[in-house]
Image (cartoon, rainbow, N blue to C red; front, side, top):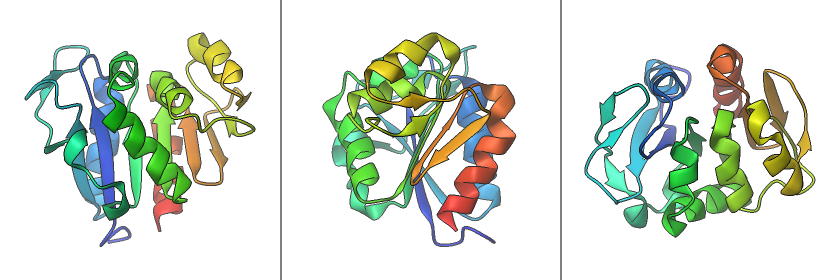
Length: 172
């Protein structure tokens, strides 16, 4: 399996986009990666939109970013909830600073903004948060997937195949 031995976090909070969570979750498992679902610690279970529940494996406060090879941040409105928890933002910032894969899709650009990692980086997102990304210093590009070093971003669920191909290639 192409990602055997790789460990990847997927962050979760209420109102996560179910496609942007489950597609990466199962694609990474299929490739042999160990996937850890990390929640904010606010609740034992989080609800996606539309109405899918997930129980995280661990709370962000208990995660050592150095134990992982990357993080995926699903969109929906969950990233606006996630960035209210310093431990979740810390995970993104520490993995980015360590040169590990940081992947964000749709509204997940809000987490990248809060982690202060966009300045001078090429990135994309759902068009509605373009201004937020630009104000955080991103060079915003309207493409299915944008890779800038260890930062991988995509716009919408329609971009998931390209998004996951880029993530898997970066993790190899």
